[in-house]
Length: 340
Image (cartoon, rainbow, N blue to C red; front, side):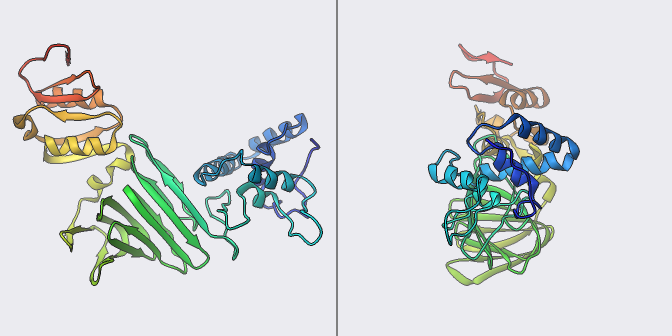
């Protein structure tokens, strides 16, 4: 494959990260010369490595199959002469890299998603149990998804919209000409800018506002509306929207991989743990479930969490054959299970 360089007649010359990502992932062999030039470019500036990693993240978030013939054809065309034929629109490496044809999603490497009149940005971002993910949004905003969450984006030149289909998400929204609008269950949230958390449980949702102002409304009743400000929370219960003060630090601690609880019964703490962790916990008896818990715990390991409860609150902890960590009153161990 012949070596290709960034040239002024290629509109990717201002976006070398997109150029190199397309070049190094074009589906063909990379020449030794290009490999040397690529490594030299990475070493020139730490920002180059960051931009290249952003390209990798953007590609994964699009949920496109890099092996699809159509995608490979686009990238091949961009890495070649740059023309599809007489009268056809020229494909640049950036367009080929992200499939900016036929309404496909496009993204730039800085976390800002490129949109044209012929395309809109639609993508599904999701996490599995025990997994957190921070990702750029098309407008340069940012979202952090809690474990077991699913967010569907629907952006265009004149709208910023998303649907939280399941789980929990923390948003840092930058100002733009269009408000950011989110649907979660039967509720709609809208904000021009700010930082807030949305939790979706079936058709009901909860909101925590850390900065800015957020409008919360019910899709079934336009008159049911809340305007929430920093330090306030909103929730939908039995068809009504309710507002109340919240402890933002406690409610958003999951972003750091921790559970912060203040004087809550163990049964509720275990429910929280199971919401975020890949391991599972269970309470063995009612008395243990009512033990009051305060503290800050990591949720990335069932064993460590169970041991912390056992040693800190005089409880028993054992893992059963099904892999569940069972926490209860100190009444001894059951056969076939290890007591910690």
